[in-house]
Amino acid sequence: METYSLLREFADSWMLLFLFTFFVSMALWVIFRPGSSKTYRDVANIPFRHEDKPAPDSGDKEA
View 1: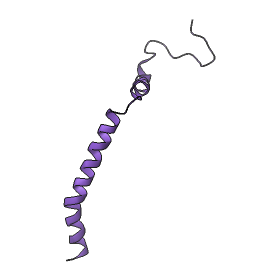
View 2 (view 1 turned 180 degrees about the vertical axis):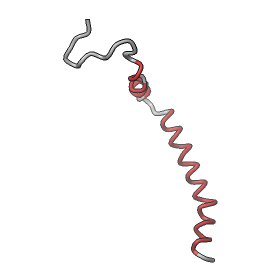
View 3 (view 1 turned 120 degrees about the horizontal axis):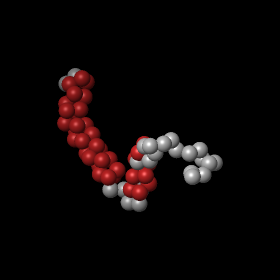
């Protein structure tokens, strides 16, 4: 069997299964990580914090 055919057969079967399993496991890991949901929820909402005015400088206090 040629090298190309052997690698093609491997990629069509086992590598496809491995990559699908890796993708599903990474998606579940991101969704169900313990203890980090508040941190990432806070980071995800950064663009929506100051819709009506810009954020103050770090040294300024908001009036």
